[in-house]
Image (cartoon, rainbow, N blue to C red):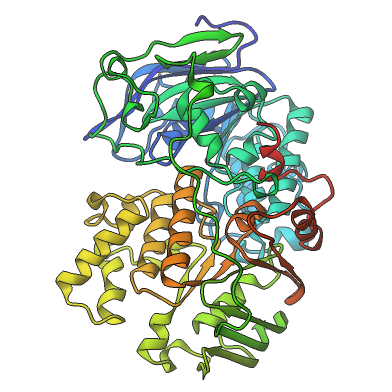
Length: 605
């Protein structure tokens, strides 16, 4: 496509290579002024690599070997590194995926934002530019906030700080890499609203990289679907939601949970082939496609224009919309727990606090509930409501001030080290941030096998075999076992943390936002695995999540937390939540009136 005066950015024929093979191969897309282009696809598809290429960069260990990238007629892949660095910030800016890691813990918030302005000097004082950017990002610009350290603000505020850094020099193009990952529903809704306002105020174009299809469809003008380093479909958001023409697009949409509509997520078999194991001929999606014919494996599909700005690369695009599901829907939860069944967990009057130098914050105030074998209780609430603190108390990682925690009939010690080996095995926690819980110096296989050795008493050989089996069940191939956590993506590390907890064969699994970093197809597979474990082993789960549609898929009951107390318990009817139960949970969870969620997205298809 030739450059046109109204085109803001264009990528054509982009190829990025790693030693094992191509990460991106012949990628092309366009962005127009004021447009938001959403880029979706599973982990390993090359989304972050594409995001960095828009800045004229590539991930460590890779190099750009072909194609071109232009932003406002500036060639991002040409010139020296110093010349490209000057374009970053002024012309195109990047909002990273993990704001907690992106911010310097040793610098105050105001200094970190002003530092960006000093790196691109201009007539306006850096402090003034920083305050203007903070206001546009929806942050307070008063001195007390500017003097805070990153750990003293919430996750949503940390994400807005990285957004403010990107906005300091008023770039023409903003590249957002998973900006809503890990945010609760209300914070996510507020951030999306802020992005809409930014587009109206500044007219900048945006490229929104995400696995959260439900979130991006509420804000994107167009979607580009990426699979195994290639763009397989691009088109207006509404058109792709109602009439996807590539089987992979349809499969991604089918994997989004929408329980209030009676729709369950449909899993997609297999995973994105790693670099070096991808097909060199034919359609790369053919091995996973229910519509594949012999011809699909022979010649690569050419891109076809179906309508204005709607392109698809599929031999069978004419029948893709009517394609049957790629897999059976995940099994619904078993029948409601027998009220006479024994309680796996009993929590009575739990009171927990966090103490600082000057302040004591109450995070749990008189929390009480029971959990039966095979039951899933969801804890929902906004950030800071006490969900994670309760989970840490149950796992013995945070000492409560008062209250009792019983496993069966046995009273548990406050600290995990005071509990028996069997009690530690019976309660396993999957933490919210696996990067903090995985040892960066030990391989994945070693870390997953360790609980089987320490808590189940298996031999080294048997523990290694158990580790490989559970890695396979969470959709991780055996080739990841000898790798270090730093070599994996965020979604892959999350699955390693899940596998490490499951290999101990617990009676109670505490899941703290375990699906927040997973793409929808892997999320559906993990939810299917948890449903199987509940059904086959009677596994009890405490499921902490900000995603009410995931909650509606897995939970028997929902406990709404606010300021450390349980406001209300909502029972989910079988076989799926009703609209009234879903609305009730949203109301007591404090969601803003009119805030859109994945359930609302489901009504668009």
